[in-house]
Image (cartoon, rainbow, N blue to C red):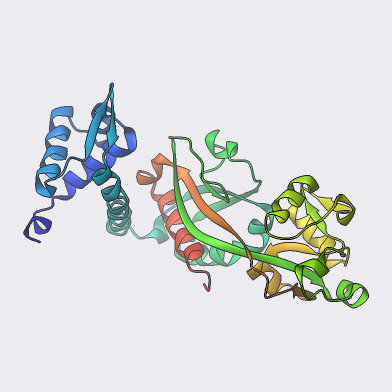
Length: 297
C-alpha cells in the first residue's frame, strides 16, 4: 500500500504513451519529453510496482502480462486527468467548434438524440454533424471524429472503448400480428415473413446459429438502410430484429416471443488518438460514453 502512495502521475502518463505508441521515442515526442527522461519515468514506475511492464521485440516494445493489466487502469486515469484539465482550463460551456459523429442510421435517428440534447446543455457552442453510415473508413479518412460501431476496429491509430452490450429482439406491428397470428415459439416464427437488413443470406446464417431456421422465402422484402427496413416492419410487411429500446419505444410495435434469448452485440465508441489533445472531442466522447454505458439513461 505504501508504494501506491508514491505513484507519480508523470510516470503513469509515460507508461500510457509508451503503451499506445509502441516505442519510447514516439512516446517521448507525444509528451514533449526527451527519450532518456521518459525511459527513467517508465523505469521508476516498474520499480514502484516491482514488475516489468514492457519487453523489447525487435525495435518495438510489447506489453508484458503485468503491463497489459495496468494499461486499462492507466487509461481510466488518463481519461480522468483529461476531464480535470478541461474543467480547469475553462468549462465545457466555452468549448466551440465542430464534432462529427458517425453511427448507424437507426442509432443516429433513435438512440443518440437524448444524448445530443444533454450535449447541447453541457456545451451549447459546439456544432454537431451526424453521419449515418456503418463504414469505419470514414473515421480513418478523418471524415468523422467519433464513431459508434458494433465491431471493434483493429487499426492502431484508433482508440476503441466497449460501452455497452446491447440487446435486440424480434418485433412486429400490431396490424401484421393481428393478420398473421402471434408466434409463441421460435419454430412458430419460421412460418412468418421477415424484413431483411442487407443480405438475406447472411441473416439466415446468423439466425440459424440462434435456433431460427429460415429460408429465402421468409425474406420477400428488405433494405440495407435500417430506417427503411424498420419502416417496412412498422407498415406490417413482416417481423424485424431491433434494439429493445427502439422497439419498446415505437408505437404500434410488439415484441415477439419475449422469452427467447435476445440477440446480443457490442457497441464500441471509437475515435482518433488525438482524443487526449482535443477538448471538444473529449467532451463529446465522454458524454456519449456515459450515455451509452448506462442502458436506462
